[in-house]
Length: 96
Image (cartoon, rainbow, N blue to C red; front, side):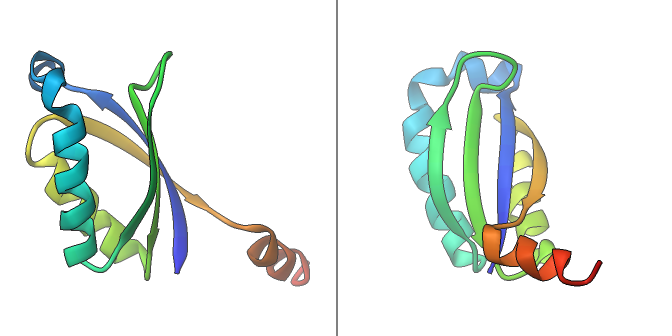
């Protein structure tokens, strides 16, 4: 499974309904699972981003579908980073 770090910010709609954010997080976990991804951690943060989460998915297409579906609900906008664990990084470095 590929690893992803997702940085998200509430939209105007999302912040107006912030009291539902943990309920939305639970629904997001289930939706992601249904599409073949696993949400590992969700953190609500201070600073430039309101939420940081880590997700595992079998490929880029799956995470793109998960985040497109989540984005279509209108509560968050996100930036996704493909992340590599130590083993994956060692395999990359072995090629150079």
